[in-house]
Length: 248
Length: 288
Image 1 (cartoon, each protein chain N blue to C red):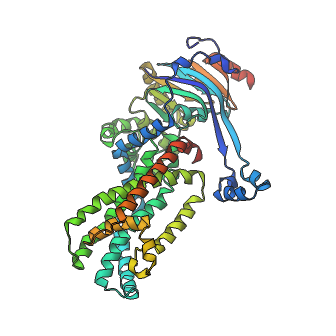
Image 2 (spheres, rainbow over the protein chains, first blue to last red):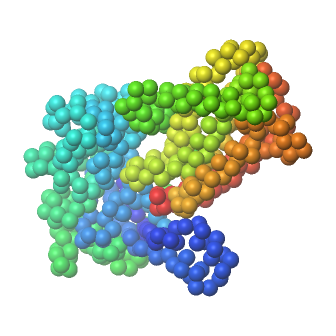
Image 3 (tube, rainbow over the protein chains, first blue to last red):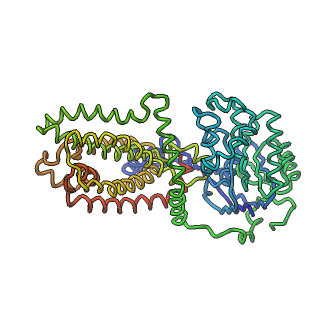
């Protein structure tokens, strides 16, 4: 049974501003104490998430809302297992599939069809197993002859179609989505929504980050409202959206 | 509290106290790093495919493809072989096989070290988007260089026949030797890949060091040419690494120091590289 538990999660990004990333600075500062040392180690830590705790249980659709820079994508990356929190605990049971960037693992010089196999590899799916899904993916994208063209020639909307179709060809237990889906056109979005509805009606968790309140309202039962890395509200989606709207 | 469906405000951390029971115990850093290495290794299909893809991309659209590696090597051998044989007053029939086998190992070592620096930073977009074992990138680096080595090695049998080097059963000794070199490539990729992700000056420093090592190690010149320095240079782990592959190919006996030196350096290096990986593995995603 997939489930997600976060406890007091903090994520700090060290900013190695230009020069402080250099080994030379650190070596020199070791020998010349004083101002230089302070300059060289003048590290800024950006706290992207601060003491975030919540649980998502099986079959739930969970939304993440907040303004730009609220920490939505960082939270998605924590959920996907990419960032290990600097403090706090994350416990995720179930295979998580993160759709954070449409173009990851797509080789621009390879054709759409070749990329289905390539991208499958990054999803931990053996090429042999992935080959069985190629036709289903091709059909979902509706890209037809473009699938035999290099991905370099695709528009960003076409790229999104391909990436979404590949990433959802095998039902993930936990699907983590960022807002890039919006690059697809209305017809594609409707199709994508239908596919995700099928997911959550089975045993899956869908976690969606967006600043489109309508999308979150339509999609999620519960939500978290993040602002500057702090969870200002967690609970039923209407209540969370209300507190977000009140803060605007 | 997990069934609480009313609005939960998380201003105070205490709102979720008592729910710790839902969490599994956190695995230790050592356990996580070891499972990273093992689950990475078990995905051989993935890192081998990624390594092949790297090579294909490098030579995309070129006529010879990866056999450019072979041709480049052949031209280098012809040029260096004739001039340096004269310089060291050696027969070309002795010097060229010596140079050919020495360069074969050296090119594997030097490119593995140089590319090892980019083990993680070159895979930045993937590491930032997909949770895969980090070690996959290190296996990929080593395997990619093994593929290059195979392309370089194509000329070796021809060279040995052309210069009438007797082939003995000792040739089989190159296989354990290459395995040990790969283990070294692995810890070097993990170590330099991690350090270079944090400190961006490391790759050029390493490239400089590699260049210096090439000239001070008996690779393209015979170790006997340096007189008393020979005793010191024979202790070099790089020389040992080259010796354990080169001398069996040339049908000669490996220097008695070579295996002990190489194995000790491998053990120490692997322990150090592993310790470093255990300590900093989870920071890599933040650094790149």
